[in-house]
Amino acid sequence: MHLLRGKVPTVHAFLACPLTPAQLESVHTEFEFGSFARFSGTYHLFIHDEPQFHGKPHADIRRDLDERGMTEDFPILDEKVGTDKAAWLVSHMVTQDDVDEKQAVSTEDVWEILTYIEQIPIVKVNYDVANMSIQEDLCNCDVRWPYNPRRYPQEQIHSSGLDMKAYQTSKALI
Image (cartoon, rainbow, N blue to C red; front, side):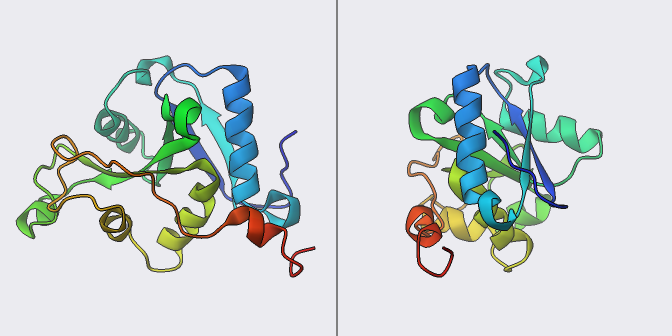
């Protein structure tokens, strides 16, 4: 069962590999939990399965979606769904300014962070509203700087630090 109450923004996720129905159901369940869907959801999740994206580098998917006019952040769902209950939250391509300012090494890379699926809604809120950035969170995951994901990939899965289960079961929300 997927809860959709009222008008909430939709997060569009894309598959980078085939996932089983059970894995897709798990993604929806984790995302809805992190979105506070049973109270007043922050986002709704829509998963797109476009086979031309399967096995494609994330930067290529970002470029393809940019060409279509879809510029918002989006999750990419790959094998990390099954192994870690995690997904890549993709932001935007590294810019020449990022390279000039020694924040990254190549404009061929995309700003992305591996985060737990249940954490994606709160991370998006942090980026969209709370003035936080993917760069800040990558630093918190001990990613080497300047950003060079091909040479120094992210090794730990990002978490906002919020224990969603404890928070949602606290007396304040019951």
